[in-house]
Each structure stands twice: as C-alpha cells, then as structure tokens.
Image 1 (tube, protein in one colour):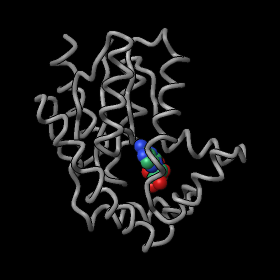
Image 2 (spheres, helix red, strand yellow; image 1 turned 135 degrees about the vertical axis):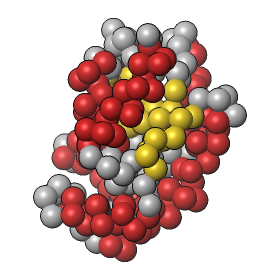
Image 3 (tube, helix red, strand yellow; image 1 turned 120 degrees about the horizontal axis):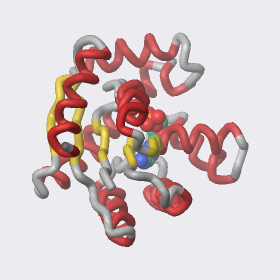
Length: 192
Ligand code: AMP
C-alpha cells in the first residue's frame, strides 16, 4: 500500500492536484471536505451538524471526521493506497489515522506539503468562490477564519509527521502542471 497525505492551507491546490495524482497513481482519493459536502447535500444529521462549523470557517469536531475516514477506509479495503486530502487537520486526527492504518498493516509513506503565501491564498479562494458554488469561498471573513484555523490547529500536523521524517515541502505557486511534476517527482522517488 502507498498512502500519501497532500497537505497545505485552504486554497493551496490540494483538490486540483489530488485529482491528477489519484488518476496517475490509481490511489483512492479521500477528501474530508468532499465527504462533508456530500453529507450536507444529503441533508444527513452529520451534514447539518458539520455545516454549522463549515459556514463559520471552523474545523468540524475530530470525532466526526475520524468516524468518516474510518468508514471510508473500511469500505475500500481493495485500494492499493489512499490519498488523504484535507485530513488529518489536527494532531489528534493524525494519531487516529496512524492507528487506523496500523490496524490494516499500513502507514503513511509521505506527506507532501504545498506552500503558498497567505495573500495568494485569499486571492485564489475568492476567485474560486466565483464558480465553486461553495459559500465558504465567497466571504473574505470566512476565508481568513479558515486560514487562522489552519495556522492554530492544522500546521502542527506537519510537525507530527516531520518527527517521523515524512514531510516534503513543495512550492505551491506556479502552473498546475509544473506543481504536478514536482509532486510526481517526490512520489516516484518513493514508489520506484
Ligand atoms: P476543505 O474542502 O478541505 O477546504 O474543507 C472545507 C471545510 O470542511 C473546512 O473549512 C472544515 O470546516 C471542514 N473540514 C474538512 N476537513 C476537515 C477535517 N479533517 N477536520 C475538521 N474539519 C474539516
């Protein structure tokens, strides 16, 4: 199994690059943001509860997203590997993910961390909000709240994996294809 975390602040290009990576390497894409938006679309209890946090730019409670990831891993036992996008977002989520993977005799192989400046993130997210249909992309206050959540709670997840020597920083500014090539180089080094 090859398990990869694509890491970075909101707007750093995780979703765009994830789609390209899972296609090339035949990994199973697990995006907690997408899973939560699908729960909201279904108007499930979980979705309606999560929406309250998402509308404010705050993280959804750990137990909610960990439960979703546990069930997604259980349902895709045939996968040759997972690409985690937008998860883990807290050290507690990272610990839970390690335990879940261990139970499947697997682990995280690498965290690729996209680096983009804050002003570029805000510009990108406001632009994405023109077409994404995501209400959390249209309001600059909510965008900035998401970046603050990232700095206060999520950035520490990179320290967690750095302690295991698993983090590689990748410049997230440039053309989509150039960034994709940089990410592929790092993956190829570890899968060859
Ligand atoms: P994303 O699509 O990854 O930008 O996520 C959109 C929103 O969903 C975030 O602002 C959070 O409110 C929520 N969310 C997504 N993933 C997580 C996670 N791993 N932990 C907590 N909240 C999450």
